Length: 115
Image (tube, rainbow, N blue to C red; front, side, top):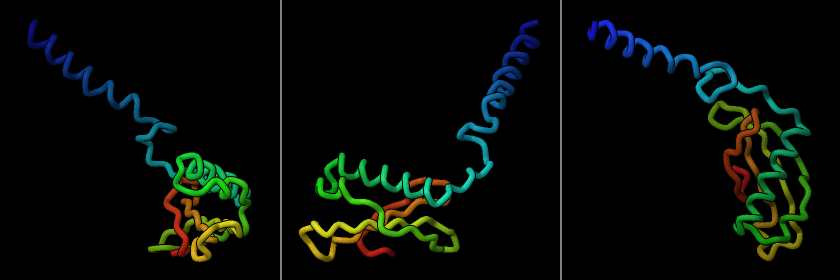
């Protein structure tokens, strides 16, 4: 009887983990739907606001609107590239900020070079 109870307990432990990995969970391998251009602009503006809030950029960047959005391919993966221009930036080389998002809207990075 103890062997059967132990067997059922082990079976229950292994089967219960499969229940939680369905669509909509982090374990699902279904790709997220791509963002539209306007959704990508909104996401990039939110990323910029967070960068300013964390103090990584001057507060003048908080009032800047996106200038341009394009899809660009890096390492065979398409990405949204959103460009912000801040004419009030102290350093002229750091006047244009590029924010990179996956097509599904995940923040990939930001820099002043565009690469």
